[in-house]
Length: 122
Length: 111
Image (cartoon, rainbow over the protein chains, first blue to last red):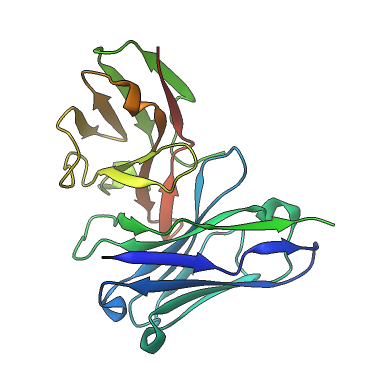
């Protein structure tokens, strides 16, 4: 079964750091592009970051640029999000999501994890 | 403020047809990028409902359909059922942001 499972969320003080992980199973992780998407409490979905299958191409939303770093370890079938200088507005459920393969006109995300909750508060 | 604009809420009686609009701009939908739709049931992760403007993944009932024209897209649900009560999000790609963009989401209430 194709699965994504996030971990690493928790309570952190403003200005602190947290590292999220996403473990992939049931598919050849190294062949897929991946995204992080977040959802603040009671709010909509917001794209956070994209990483290509090899990790050579990376993009970030303006709201996290310079503070968050996405990476992957294809040997470990894992995706990561290093979050630094955290702010109250980063409080959200963070989802990792797989990019559907072979789509050339603006990709979509065909597999999502259940999410991990990050709370930034003093 | 989301890049794609959706109505915050829509409602309909069982059996009725509803539509949810999604309006973008020349750097996303209007640039030719496809629109995708996700359904999010309460307390769960989003699930793709429509991809590539009007394609349904296997397992999604044909009561759900999508369309796109110019800088806008729409999701239609016919034969509304109580289980359709959820939040719906449109998504596309934005060339000026080099990333995905979502609508603000539409909460569907089945009366």
